[in-house]
Structures are given as C-alpha cells and as structure tokens.
Length: 210
Image (cartoon, rainbow, N blue to C red; front, side, top):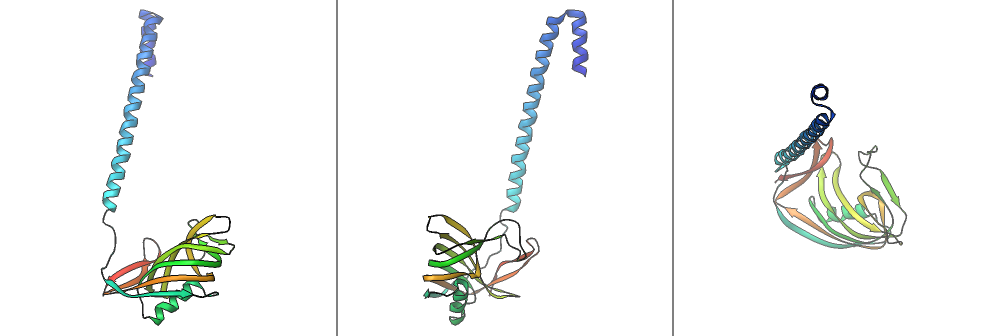
C-alpha cells in the first residue's frame, strides 16, 4: 500500500517514466527481500535438523558380551523356518544371540512390510507364492517377558521371475522346500531381552548386562 501511494505521488509530480523506474526498483527490492527471507528459512531448517541430530546422537541401549556356542544346521523339507530355529536354540541352551545366516528355499512365504499396522501391531502381510529362494536372512534371538523366546528375522526372497521381496518373516509362514542352511551364534556374559517400549508402544530389543 505504501509503495502504491508513493508511485501515485511520483506520477503526479515527475511523470510516468519516473514512476516506472520506481516500480522496477520496488519489484527488485521485494525480490531481494524474498530471496533473503527464503535463505533465512533454509538456514533455519538446516539449523533445526542439526539440533535434532545432535539431540538424537547417542540414543541407544547396549550391553557387551562374547560369542558363545556356534551352531551350524540344516532344516529339512516341511520345517517351519522360525519354529526350526527355536528348536535348535532350545536344544543348545541358547537364550540370546543372533541368526547369522539362513539360505535355502521356501515353499511359499508371507512377509510383514512397512505400512499401516494390522492387529499384530505390524505392517500388512504380503504373501508371495512359491517356491522362492531365501537369498539372505538375519536376525536376533531374545527372550520376551510375555512371549518367551523371540526370533526376529528379516530377509530377502526371490521368485522364479527374479523379482526380489524383503521384509519381516513370520512364524508359520515360511516353510522349507528343499533345504535351509542356518548358522546361529549364542552369546555369553549378557542378557538379550525384549521389553515394552513406551515410545514405540510395543516390545523391542533390550540388551542387558548379566
């Protein structure tokens, strides 16, 4: 409004040419101010992100132990992948550790993927017709306060069209076809637990000193 008032005064006193020059100057000035404001906003965003990152740095829970019993095994046709791993851990008194490797074939598989949560508190269950190759699969072995032994696995599978899928494997939804080679490491000197996380509103890994 002020700029328009000044332009009217200039037109009345100095003519339209001078008013045009003033308008161009005003537009240029407004552009400079807009650019400066945008730069300030971008700088603020970067500063905000840096502060967020600094605040998040170091947020973790950890416990140290050592590798204990190491088990190599083969799951036979018809065996459930997670059920078989649980049996191996129970027979070898492994209560905490990690599944280093699973490679083999599955008759079919269903994977939980990221997305809207279902009744289990996880993303949608995607069913992939088999047979499929399990290209890579790793996970953790822990004890839940309410569920007993939990084997948390994520893996990649490939079908006969060479399409690769990945996600969270589910007990009872990954049945061995021809073979499944697995390697399991137990840990000593620490506890690998799963406890309720109030922020995530579900159970998560909770390593603890023995």
